[in-house]
Amino acid sequence: MTTLASRPIGRSTLRVAPFAFGGNVFGWTADERTSFELLDAFVDAGFNFIDTADAYSRFIPGNVGGESETIIGNWFAARGSAMRARIVLATKVGLEMGPGDNGLSRDYIHRAVDRSLQRLRTDYIDLYQAHRDDPDTPLEETARAFDDLVRAGKVRVLGASNFTASRLEAALATSAGNGLARYECLQPHYNLVQRKEFETALAPLCAREALGVIPYFALASGFLTGKYRTTADLGKSPRGARMGAMLDARGSRILAALDLVSRAHATTPACVAIAWLIARGVTAPIASATNVTQLREILSGATLELTTEEVAALNQASAN
Image (cartoon, rainbow, N blue to C red; front, side):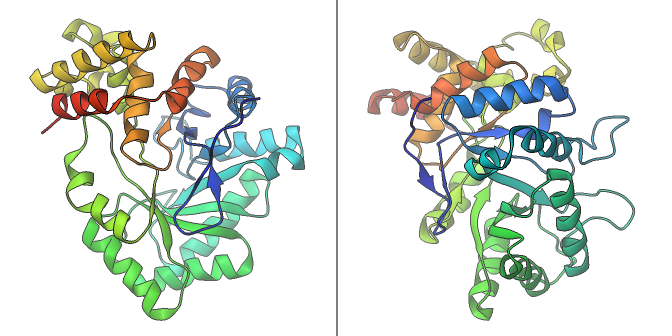
């Protein structure tokens, strides 16, 4: 097993290898058997950070939500308590799970965390994240509910996802002003294609507040793998329909820059896209895979060191 340098999540004691497995595929494009194979390979490669959500994969017809957490819980049960102790487990709350089951109210957070713990077959969650902002619930109510969970030992560290800079700053101030556990990390939409929103306001805030950054869609839903280069490629997968908007002049420049750097390192565009995020200083990019070969390819990006010139070339090609 490879030993990887770990990074802290914000100011917390949690430390993670520089890549997170995105559990959105479990119970969707990866059945339980395949999911177990992926998780085993992930850990065997020296990684320890798994990210999921209670709502995965309710967005798939026939699913009700909780499928991903259930598969991870079954894996923990099959592999034993020693495996659970090795993993930094992240899940989220807030997206709709049914009538009245959504948002960040105190009552719902308390109900939802117990359901997640049951599905995950564990008595604690390492990183519990607000999946998205809830403008209908006072920030102090949400902060006190999350603080309750930390004090009860059900949750170790808190995080936020999909927050604007102004709302994240207000949430941090609310926690600080009331002596409550705060968000220690942000999970933003950030990659070579999607840069402006994070870099303009969120990145400076995260740096100032010493927040960890664990961006999702690190490979832009697969666009940065180089799989989609023409309109004819859009039918290659169910995600292809999302790629059309990226196949513009800027997208072509990004792919060309990835090709150039990947050839220099005898690797793939996906690896370079992951390495670029790490070079930009994020804590751990999140990406998914549906087979072990694909996973191993992506994981190599976490140890790929780009030159200053290569990072600059990628920055220029992807500039908005």
